[in-house]
Length: 72
Image (tube, rainbow, N blue to C red):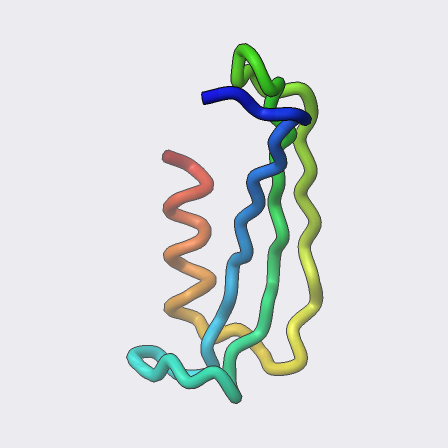
C-alpha cells in the first residue's frame, strides 16, 4: 500500500465517573497520544503524549489500572 504522506495514528484515553458505567455524558478525555509514521518504512518519526485534566474526578479503580499498565 502506498501513501502520499506520512501517517499519524492517535489514541484517546477516557475516563468514566463510575466503574461499570460508560455513559458519554460522564466520559472525559484524559490523555491524547499520537505517533507519526514514515510513509514508506512505517518507522516512528515522532511521538506525542499529553495528559488532560478531566472535569470530573477519576475514580480509584481507573487510577489503579493505569498504574498497573504503566509498569508492564
